[in-house]
Amino acid sequence: MSIVPPARMPKEQRRTQVLDAARAVFVESGYYAAGMDVIAERAGVSKPVLYQHFPSKLDLYLALLDAGLEELLEATDAAARETTDNKLRVQRTMRAYFAFVDNPDGAYRLVFESDLMNEPAVSVRVEAANHEIAKRIAKVISQDTGLRPDEALLLGSGMQGMAQVAARRWLAHDSVLMTRDEAADLIAALAWRGIRGFPLTHPPHEITHPPHDIAMGASAD
Amino acid sequence: MSIVPPARMPKEQRRTQVLDAARAVFVESGYYAAGMDVIAERAGVSKPVLYQHFPSKLDLYLALLDAGLEELLEATDAAARETTDNKLRVQRTMRAYFAFVDNPDGAYRLVFESDLMNEPAVSVRVEAANHEIAKRIAKVISQDTGLRPDEALLLGSGMQGMAQVAARRWLAHDSVLMTRDEAADLIAALAWRGIRGFPLTHPPHEITHPPHDIAMGASAD
DNA sequence: GCCCAGTGGACATCAAGATCGGCGTGCAGG
DNA sequence: CCTGCACGCCGATCTTGATGTCCACTGGGC
Image 1 (cartoon, helix red, strand yellow):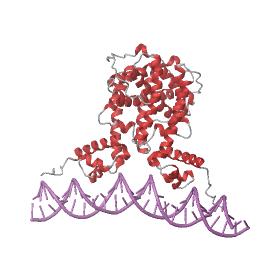
Image 2 (cartoon, rainbow over the protein chains, first blue to last red):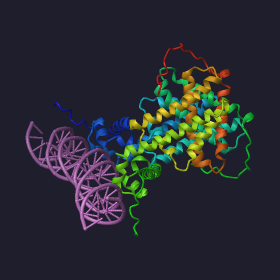
Image 3 (cartoon, rainbow over the protein chains, first blue to last red):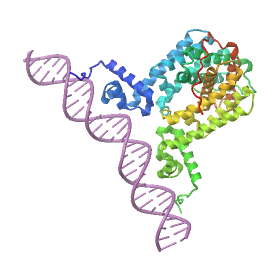
Image 4 (cartoon, rainbow over the protein chains, first blue to last red):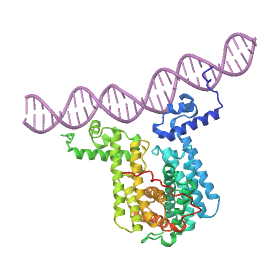
C-alpha cells in the first residue's frame, strides 16, 4: 500500500518517459559518463525495462540524437521558408539556432557537443545535418554573391559554425546581458554584412583557380 | 642481438616518443576508444613505462591537449602581433587557424573535437583558450566598431567558431579544391566585411539595454 | 663475477553494460 | 465470491574489457 504499485503504464508513455530521463542524463554527463543505472533510476524504472525499449545504450542515444537533429533541421527549414528575403532568412536561421540551444531540455548538447563523434553512426548523422544546413546557407550566399558553389559552401559551413558557437556562448555567458533575439540578430547582422559586401571585395589578393569541373563531392540525399 | 636490446634511451627522448604515439592514437580514436595497450605498442614500449612517464591516461591526454592549445594560442598571438592593421590581423588569425588544423599530427582534434569535454580538467582548458582567442578578436572588433565589450566578445566567439568549423570543413572536404590560404582568406574576407560594415547597421531593430555595470564575468588569468 | 636498473609479459581490480529467477497484480472461469 | 493463471516488472548477477600493477629476465658496470 505504501510502495506505489509499479505503475503499469501504456508502452508509448513509458517509452517517452525513458527517453526524457535518458536525455537529461546524457545532457548532463555526456554519453560515456552516463550510466544505464542512473538513467533507469531517473526514469523511475529498472534496468531491464530500458532494454525492453532499446536494445542497447547506443540505440537509446541515437534515438535522442535523431530527435534533436530533426528538431534543428525543421526549425532552420521553417526559418528559410518563412520568407524569400535572404537577409531575413539569415536572421531567422540564426534565431532558430539560438532558440534550439536555448531549449531547456538541453538537446543541443547531443548535437553540438556529443562525446560520441568517433562512433560512425553518430558522426554521419551530425555531419549530414550540418552539411544540409550549410548547403541552405550556401544557397543564400550563392544568390547574393558571385561565388562558386564550393566557396559558398565553405562560407556556409563557417556561418553554421559561427551560429553554433555563438549560441552556446550566449547561453553559457551572455544570456543575462542580452536577450536571445538580440544576440541572434547581432550575429545575423555580422553574417549578413559579411555576405552582402562580398562580390565587391572578394578577391583579397589573387584568386587563381581553373574552373575545375568537380562535382562538389557530397550530394548527400 | 636480433631483438634490438630494449633501446636504452634518454628520458626526454623516450617521453616525446610516447607523446607522439599517444597523440597519434588519441587523434585516430578519441580518448575513450584509445587503449593504453595500443599506445604502448605504437610507442614501441611496454605499458609500465607509460606509467613511469605519466601517472594516468588522463595526465597523458592533458599533456597533449596543453601542447595543442599552446600551439594554437602561440600561432594566433603571433598572427596578431605581426601587424597593427586589424584587417591583416583577422586574415593572419584565420590563416593560423587553418594552418593549425592542417598540421599533419592532427593535434587539432584534441582541441576542437575532444570527446572528453565532460572532464572538467579538459573543458576548463579548452574554454579558457577559446575565450582568450575570442577576447583578442573582440579587441579588434571593439577598435573597429562602436560595439560594447560584451557584444564584441560574442561576435569574437562567433568568429572563432567560424574559423574552427570552416577550417575543419576545408581539411575534410575542400582541401583539393582550394589552397589553405585561399580558404582562410575567403573566411577572413567574410569576417572582415562583416566587422567593417558594422557600426552603420548594427541596431537591426532596437537595442534597449541599460549600461549594466557588469564585469564581463571571466577575467581569466 | 656479481649487483642493479630498467623492460616486458602476465595479472588483479573494477566499473559498467547487458541479462535471469522471484513476485505482485489483475482477470477469467467456475 | 474464490481460485488458478498469465504477464510484466524488479533485485541480484555475470561478463567483458580496459586501467593500472607485480615477478622474472636481460644486459651492462665495477
